[in-house]
Image (cartoon, helix red, strand yellow):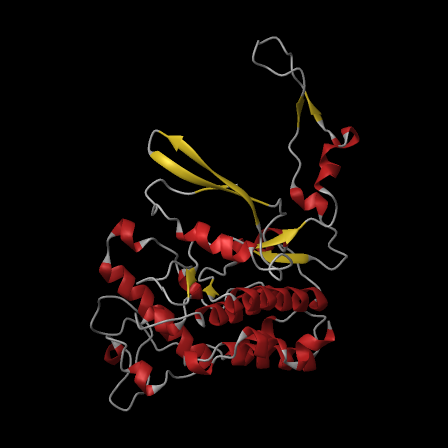
Length: 336
């Protein structure tokens, strides 16, 4: 269940988005579906309360282990199908991070209610409000069989938006921002495709594609720190994916702090200092990083196929990023 803040708009955008998803016959297999909703009146006002189907843990929690290649491919394909459903409904998710990728139970949730599964804890039962029995909580991971194909669903549409009504600023994890978001340019649903590319890299390597300190700038009110984060992000992009297109590079306000007149990289440390504070660090390319960190069981041929998917999704120009439908047509996804 999700309780929306009372200061949200009277006609909740999130509720409207969930209604559109609920009305779609194709969404139930790939998107966490709204079952019911009601209003709760509390001391701070009225809250919309959304009730969803029960789900298991998120991908990040479950996969704190090495995963087989077939399972990583299945996760990538299911995420793309979820984005395909959303985009067909003219909805952008905007916050496609590992915490919003939930795994559906492979067994009935009623299994947890079987008395044989209870793990009793000691209770003297003397206090009038103390229950006669106390049982240990049971994690939902026990409802998942990781040897089988897992069912993944995309959840949490609090940051989502309709194609025709994008927000002024998207709410998303810093490290998953597309370059147009970092540069505060116009953006659309293709930011979801960029996030997909970042997540696919992380699923197979166990490492984020871009590493940034995720801080709420509105709370700390520190524009200088935000600029430092943006510069660090763009420098990591150019190191991993190659130089920004000229039109995009021109929108980088502090570009000449890091590049000379010939567009040669002259510093990679970020901060307020006008002079470089250390040697120039040139990181590894996407191909080099993926091949170095790929699972031991992955063949070189499969690694090349995944890099092709990553390169396709992680294109700087939003207009050149393929749709989820187009990515699903790539040969690598046809094997499952």
